[in-house]
Image (cartoon, rainbow, N blue to C red):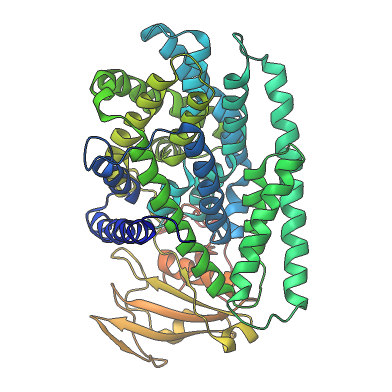
Length: 520
């Protein structure tokens, strides 16, 4: 028997998704994060707009956590393992020690400025501590950042959910007293260790199985990969470990192992993640009561400033100190700690647990995320340029569903020659790319052509490069080296590592060379 109003429900749902897609296109054009548009759409549809009422925080919590699983899965599948590995130590510290530092700073401010009790203050700090994977992935992947820097931010956003979820859950579940710090630390260590182990096991076993089983249709591979990742979440949760960490680790493993139809899998996961983001943010927009928000505007601005100006920089300073991260990159890490769906979803946990003052906390978090994402998101490219953390030249992988590339274990890369690159004027034969890499096409002034050995590269050219998996990193390093030091990069000791070693001018000689050797 068909449910009543099914036709209307499907029509309204489809129209909401179409409107969200159109709005996301407009937001992308002006540099706004899509989450703000989706939240706004939820507010328009809600009780103060078209009158749709949704006031079930328990259901919102369940749906929100489910959506975060899908969003985090897509983030892991599309993350470059070499980039993640480069930033892993700092990312891990930011996701654990950094979360604790941020929570303590915000809790202290909430206790001293707003007069909240310690339980509510600690809840606010724990809720606001994690950065958001969806916001970080959607905004930062458009910026040409050094792999190590982007690896820190992406890794942190994928790893910092478990400690925050655990802290918020414990603070919401206790009676009148917060659990001891030792209890929280012990739980965090157990959940992180076993969550990572389960995720790695699921990823490796799943990859081995998919390589050996010939499925009857290519469309089954993306479904199988996503099902494995979700199974990892369920297995970790059943073992009382971190399901979110299991999702991220299993997705990272599966995304960086050569599987059949890998490009189709990534495309499928990206589509599912977009649908999850639309549903999640529209639902959170429906859940909030706009009539309560004006009273929390100034407290939200003060709490947000404490988070951005004090708490986040302190966490970054402490967690990056062992790695001697340059101060410019520290400043960018401090500014780029974007908040999004995760804090708002976490804020539904104390609401559904009926913690006193939880509704006010939810309103505060909603405003902080909305206001400061509106400020930070569009200004991140400007901040990166001002701080000088843009890379000179960085290749990007292009996913192409082509059997020959998969059979040859090859990748298709693209790179754009920036205005300050010394690739300008270089002839193609002077690049000296590895034998298993080829510059297949140049796009110049909107027109593509196949280059010859004596073709000169120009500023603004877009390069399409085919490289086997064995020489991909070598080809990227060579491109970066020539872009920084010119065709005699080998003489200057420039190997294309990232970030680049400084070439410092010295009196009496044109360059101070780290070591001298003939070019390759």
